[in-house]
Length: 230
Image (cartoon, rainbow, N blue to C red):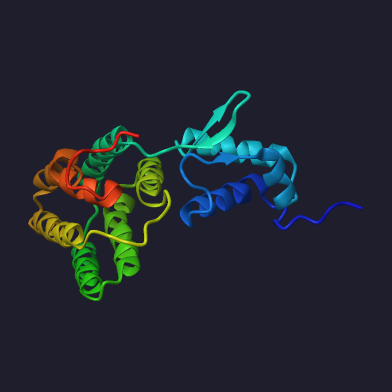
């Protein structure tokens, strides 16, 4: 008798991928942990093939490292990882803003304003979860309008590495308040059709590692200085 799987048979590798990502997000799989393929495949009731496919995708996205004879290790997010991700996101989102300039309308600008105001209210209530969701949606407005699905997908994966590794329950309120002010400046540039200024601002300020370094230290390493490279 075939063992019943707890997963839908439609797309096993995608479902295994989502399962592993959810385990990382909630902290069941932590940076440095080793994923036992035998145990995991038995737990999910699937063969190693969809599990291996999911792990290859996770390795390509930077979440794990598949090492011969040592198993699969969940990657640690290092300072250099954060620095490089910020640089890439700055380049991607500045490109997206320039591309979106051809299609963004007053309705789009109003949506950005409404989302930013929602973030401000969420922080006033110390509701970081609501802030987090609205923040992602805010950036996705111009990412989507760029018309570049690969760019949008790449930005999404990089943000998951930053924020869902695992997703933290605490936050740095001053950072979110500063980010809201930056969003406001960004919206003002876009509203005035100063798209080049908006693109430069999101790259050189909002996603600048050097500009955000103090907050990054506090959020990821709980220290205002002395970055931990481990």
